[in-house]
Amino acid sequence: MRIFHCKNIDILLKRLWHNYFKYPIDTLSDYWPNTYKEIREYFFNCKWYEVYDFIEFIANNYPDVYNEVNPKFIDFCNSVLERELSAYRFVGGKIIQITSEVEVSEIEEALEASKPLKAVNAHLKTALDLLANRKSPDYRNSIKEAISAVEAICNLITKEKKATLGQALKKIDDKVGLHPALKNAFSNLYGYTSDAEGIRHALLDEPNLTFEDIKFMLVSCSAFINYLISKASKAGIEI
Image: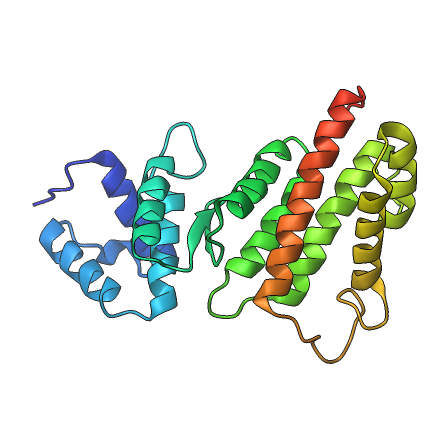
C-alpha cells in the first residue's frame, strides 16, 4: 500500500533514491515505513560530511514553486547549525565552512545580483561548489573561479571581453571612479593569482593554500562584485 501522503515528498523520495543513493527507481518501496527506516539508518550511520551532503541535497531537491532551493528548510537548518555551534552554514544553497553573517550576506548578495550576468554568476557558483566539496575541497580552482568572476564583471562594465582584470580596472576607474587604494588592492590580488607562484599558473605541485585563503578571496571578490554592480548602476552603465 502506497502511503506517501504528500506529492512533494513523493517527488523528493524518488530523487533521493535515484540521484542521491544511485539506486534503481523500481527498488523504491511503496510502503513508507520501509523507505523511512532505510533512509534513517543511512543518515545516522553515514560519515560526518555525508550528513551535510544529504541535507544539502534535500534543500536543493525538495520542490519549491518560487525558488531553486527550499528557503524555509535552509533557514531552519541554519538556525539549528547556529544553535549547535557548527562551523558550517548554508550559503547560496550550498553548505560551506563560513559562519559570519556579514560574509554569508556578501556572497549571497553577489549570487543574487549576478543572476542576469551569466558569466559572473557561473564563476561564483563554481567557486562555491569547489569550496563546498567537504570530502575534497579544491581551494586552488575555487580561488581561480572567484577572481574570474571579478574579471567577468569588469569585462561587462568595460565592454571588452578580452581585457585582463588589471587592464579593465584602469578603464573602470575612468568610467565610475575607484578609490586608488581599492583599485590597487584588487590589482595586487590579481597579480598574486597570476604570477609564477600564483594560483593560475599551471604548476605541477599544488600551492600551499588553506581554507582561510579561499574564504578571504571568495568574500572579497563577492564584496567587490557587489560594489562594482552598484557603481555601474549609479553611473548609468548597463551590464
